[in-house]
Length: 436
Image (cartoon, rainbow, N blue to C red; front, side, top):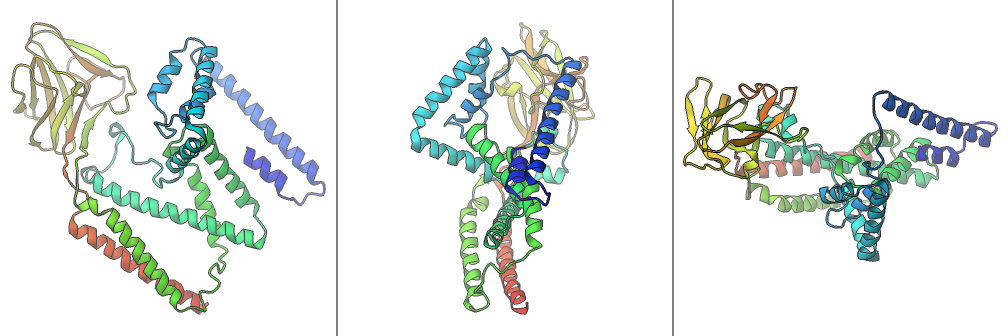
């Protein structure tokens, strides 16, 4: 809205009375905003929503949280917990104001500049927009991708980052062209003000996350498409110098060599991040329940593994139980069972193939055993706990994948292909410029 109004008042229009036209459109936009907010509130109240001011988080509390130097402006649970513990709205505002003032005084001018840099880096530097941080509970990806997720994500993230930098450079180049012509188009001005406004909102005031920059992507795509429609000779002296292509090729070689050196760890260091096979508790969109297993009774949870697995974690692996864990395949055959009277709740075992299994937890103690479960009226897993509809055991099934992201051959083949492709693009670019 602010970007639209600024563009409307900064850019000349073709109307006979420009001021009248601007005032009319400003009034229409403001009336639309007010009417939309009123309709939204009426719709909320009609559907039973009632605001409790003493429970709502004031806007100032989010500003104070964004200036926590320990989190680079990201959302953090400790600050939210502190503000929620304040009993009234006035107490929440007082706490937020005191916290914000204390943090700004503690940071000082140098600290404020450094914190803004960290927030800007977090908000603007990631070309994936945090899209790979999807909870495993919501994965609906091909098994080959899940099996090789570390390698695939590295390729995709590298491609996204290169594309993102290209979009930024093309938009910047298009803006430089317009400044040299001393004429900014209305679309570029509107898109640029929206870009700056959204960035300043999150970098200066609100919390900063990579995904909050996603609305910038359509602006960058549109700006890139428009910028390519009006090519201008930015490098005016490129036709006069035969050494310029060689210099560009050499600079590209040096930059690619630095990138290869920085990423050499991909073929040396092992990636120990496990592959998620079964998980129903990553999103935590439920309240924890506890099912009580009486002495000498058993709780059985069926599940389906779409990938091979070699680890099971129950109750986040935070305690032991007096009993036994038993894993059976689809035919009821015991393929693994825990040892000892008090087994831990994180177990590694020989790799098991993908298929249908049942996990049984038997209480062999004299006291009732409470296990954390996830209640849901929708399917968190293909089957609920046997004998307990709409209850699912809180557990994870994983595959411990410990291997380098890229092998030596793939690593050097990748960077060799990028080097040859880049040199070919540079050569063809200058050949095309000589032809026109």
